[in-house]
Image 1 (cartoon, helix red, strand yellow):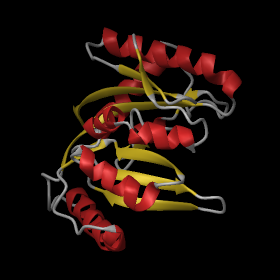
Image 2 (tube, one colour):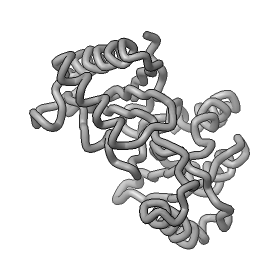
Image 3 (tube, rainbow, N blue to C red):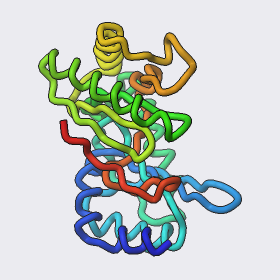
Image 4 (cartoon, rainbow, N blue to C red):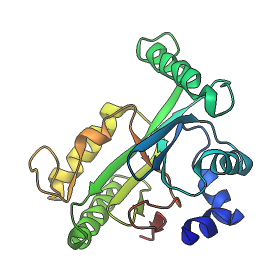
Length: 223
């Protein structure tokens, strides 16, 4: 646990993580010995917000930190660990209102997001090749993609205010053109999971946070 304590005690690491938490629903999953415990939703805009949750609920355990793929305008939420259930009801209602058209301003857009996951570390080389191929295709279409190494699989992301159907369309077209396998045509990883790309409530690993299985941070791969 020294690696975890040292990493999350570093203020620079905290600052980098928080940059990606703003205007996102943040989720922490504690990896206990006998079960997982989900803390959701967390509202994190400043380094001290993340530091609060680490000290209050995440010290001494491994955890995975996730952010929503959707950019959202979070309402004022009740504070503290005991109020997470109430906060979750508020967020769920906001999502329902958005879906049914009663609160069109809650979601400001979605990133184009592709998850290239693996079953075994021997597949990382192939997964990286697919991620870079997908990034090349996005560049050809005029986008500015980012490739992130989760320390297992890879994420390809275009930050923006897109709609889910459009994200799926773009990713599918590039995968077909560049011969990248997807969940639509294979069950063998690595592949691009199209269902993930189109999931409006999808959460994804937060950049620069540690992975509970590898003890390594998610870092950007320069392309």
